[in-house]
Amino acid sequence: MDLETSPLALPFPEMPAIDGVTLRVARARYKNWDRCDLTYAELAEGTSLAGVFTKNVCCSTEVEMGREQVKLGRARALIVNAGNSNAFTGYRGREAVEQIMAQVANHLDCQPSDVLVSSTGVIGVPLPKDKAQAGVEAALTAEPCSWQDAADTIGTTDTFAKGATTSAMIGDTRVTLNGIIKGSGMIAPDMATMLGYIFTDAAVEPAFLQACLSAASEQTYNCITVDSDTSTSDTVLAFATGKAGNAPLVNADSPGADAFMAAMLDICRQLAHLVVRDGEGAQKFISISVTGAKSDESARRIGIAIANSPLVKTAIAGGDANWGRVVMAVGKAGEPADRDKLSIAFGGIWAAKDGLPLADYDEAPVAKHLAGEEIDVTVDIGLGDGKATVWTCDLTHGYISINADYRS
Image (tube, rainbow, N blue to C red; front, top):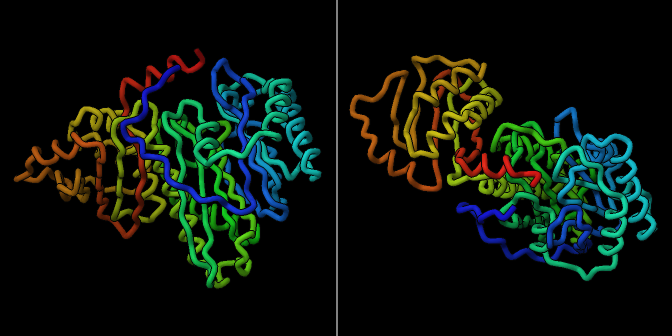
């Protein structure tokens, strides 16, 4: 399936090396395609690990095992398979994962539990163990590759490689965070996202790394939606090699902890936005800001109801400032709301306030805003101080075309 690059794509950034991380890619040929589809990240001894995973109860073996591995807090390697999710595959799927873990562990002389595995692609097809073994063997001895090569290799229906970088000062030490992510469809909150990996040279204890990643995820990965579907494989992992040499971050009171937490939030937000920008068939990137709700969580739920509405998304795709559809979505969210206190704006221009359309409302500047690629929707509930921002994309014929042909 040849896909045109999303019009919302951003160029891949310049990303520095992370001490303690070596990336390699190989061809396992999980699908009939002429590209690399297996990624191997080798990590320094003592690397801290954290992770967030899908809440889909029909998750893959990789997710089930990853949850247990994260509790141990350490990692030496990561393998990512693209083209086959290995979900809903029973004992055969688990055997394939265990084989990969043992193969890499034998190479690195570490415990199999130190090897994380992720897979993404078609559901219900067992990961072929022969192809996995050959692909891993090739990756173990391949030449190191770039961040962009790794980002390309973990993709499936992605139309562009997704990466982000940021840094923070911990005392006198600058630490770097790099991230790569894949995701285009089957994207919704209460998950992580599709597959995302964050690497830093900072010294961070596993418990605090987990706290930082979980907090950032709530404000980023759990605030994006493309189509309201949560994948069976969604995973975001964070690895901290400790090679920067800073005084280890143990908790939120450690010197420099605030800066690191801000950097984690920054990189997660960048990565989450990239997924929405590559939403299947997307032509517009939509930010929905909800204010005046009873609580922040209520605001987030209202925002997600708006973002998931096919009627809202198709109206924006067509450049139609149909604020009535936004009203509908607020009302179906199941959260406190009062029709007569509701206000709605597009591109900072109020179309309705306090439950009524504005008498002097001019739709021309709103239509001009909706003709662009960056769309802002603001909804004030008028009941409290709760606020949240969520991100989505429009819904076009392209989404149907991509998903109707997904397995071909």
